[in-house]
Length: 139
Length: 139
Image 1: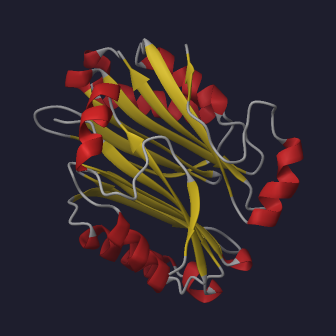
Image 2: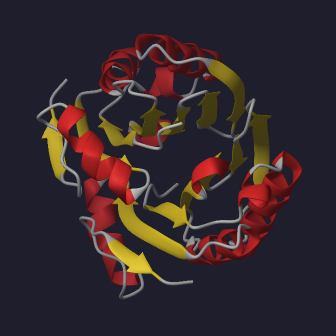
Image 3: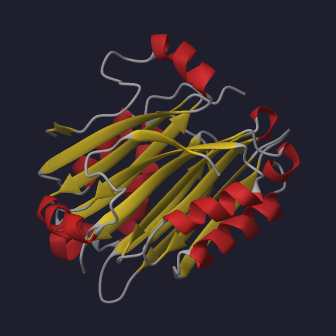
């Protein structure tokens, strides 16, 4: 199986604190994000902290999606890592809307064996860079 | 709670295929890596694919560690994301040894609210960059 993967490292800022602190809502959002990229779920784990904050991951056949929230700061750290040719970007839009994010910063990292990354680069969208870059995506 | 986090995006190459395909060994290695960084486990999920490959995550109070393996390619995609002032680097050494990796590529991404990242940068080791960079770490 090809190792080429796309990993979005996502910071969601100015989110709704109530939504970030609701473990059921965070789990539902992560599962909706998983469906949005067309991935297959093989496992998941979620946890709510006291006094606040939620952490969770969905393992997919094509890698994983994770989220860690700081309701008191309106901040969620999100990772969407897909292989198998899936586009991870729809998941970011789903999570941004679910948490009512005011701003997002997204960095993409292309992963895998070096020869497959080089060969696969031709198949990636124009906005993917092979090294990495920081940019701001307004939702 | 401070949002400043350190996220190591790690590619382990030329690993031992048998170790990468053993779900119990991968889980044990990830838990050992978690102990090496001094983190507190709050959840975990692991899955073995047919015909081969293992995927897994350990949720920690300080974010997460994940691994996805391609035994046929000797490749493991590893993430070590820590907040709360924990140094994620010992986990990479543990996993590199556990999988008998011949080579590793590590990229660090500093995460969190922009003002905390700026302020926290003074406390980070000299080898941490605030944007990101690709480099090779020989194990």
